[in-house]
Length: 168
Image 1 (spheres, one colour):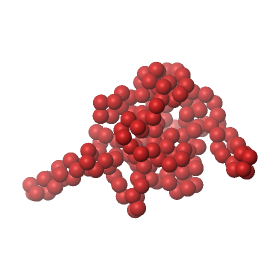
Image 2 (cartoon, rainbow, N blue to C red):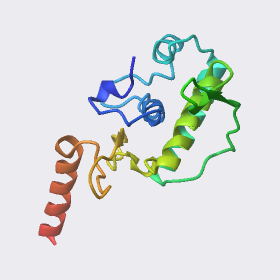
Image 3 (cartoon, helix red, strand yellow):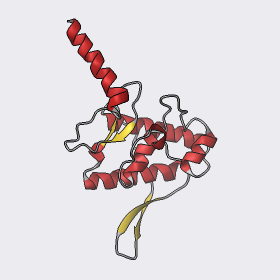
Image 4 (cartoon, rainbow, N blue to C red):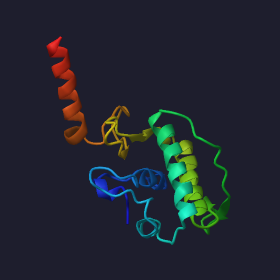
């Protein structure tokens, strides 16, 4: 089950989509927070997760939200175990190690690392609407989107700003 699909958003390319999906596990617009219930979290992750796993993932998700939105710094340094795998076509790929939260965090960090190498990491953003904060991948030519959806978040905010300017 994809958390990003719940918000009808296009997934970020490649393994960066895993970071986007983790960010979108948060409960928005009437959806449950997938990291508060072990059953929902297990369905999302595709493997059982314990309560300590969920706590670790929620903390990591918050730190990731701070980094993507530019609203703060991580609460801690995230160090995970990853591997390198050589495929038959001589491509080297980062692989996640561990289990539970450790494996998910490793997969997300590996995806972010690859995105940084491809210069796509800067295109992963969170919606500027403080009641929304859905994670989206900015595919605009100049990387200038600030709303996950102009219709649901951008237009109301722009209208409110316009009315405030007109009132003055």
